[in-house]
Image (cartoon, rainbow, N blue to C red):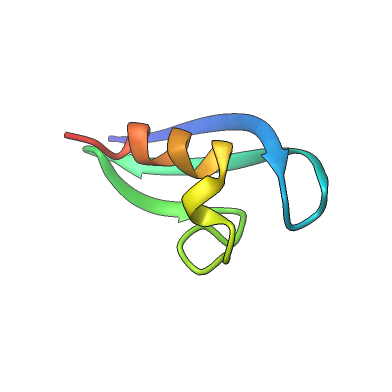
Length: 57
């Protein structure tokens, strides 16, 4: 079953707050509407940490 989550946090790429829609299924990431994974700020990103929490099994 797909689950849609809306996350918010500070985005360094746009230098401001951001809301990101994340779609997961059975703990697997299907879609995210930001540069998660290829963004150079991913290691220090609040939103990326929340995405990782959603995809932990």
